Image (cartoon, rainbow, N blue to C red; front, side, top):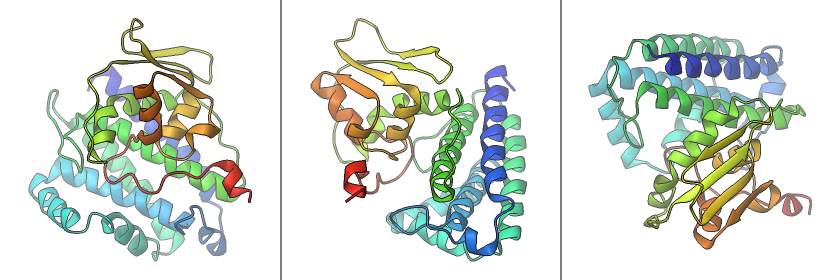
Length: 266
């Protein structure tokens, strides 16, 4: 296992432990707290993470079974994820929490064992084990953010969000693809400031199209948790500006566009 993969797996566990600490003492009623406009509860959020970890393990250990799952997903692209979350949310909270804990530990072991250079099939493009671990951080970060909001918790801003920034940049073309559009052949330079004050950059600094601002807020955009006008992220150039309105760091359909904070207040 490479040092990079070991670091990403460790950060994934840290992100998971943080969310775990927020939900481990909740009672049954609190597990039913609504976390999204679509009606997902905390139970839905944890069920989704547990299900996705299980799917990731299957993709690594049983590619044929995962391929069959892809066919089912293709037949029901709008409801496949929700159906799994609805089913998992019916599990008793203690059992659901333990399932998530066991699944994420197994996934860490399986990711560490993937041979160097081998790609893992997924609902989007095939991924390296490092990319898959990064995607799991993204999912855990995003769904953890939803849970924190429902519980009135202000999530700590850590440099673990850099992994999600990287994924958001890498999936630029995919964001266009999921909307049936073609990405412009224009380079965008991205320069973001992490919570610790470090500067994170992607792309040529000579590019005319630019994205600058907060790394943490960029992740809120990339996980479609905030409207572009409600974050400290700024674009120079029409292509860069449009990208910020469609950015998504996750596989699958983009879902509803985030509402502005001012709209939620009315």
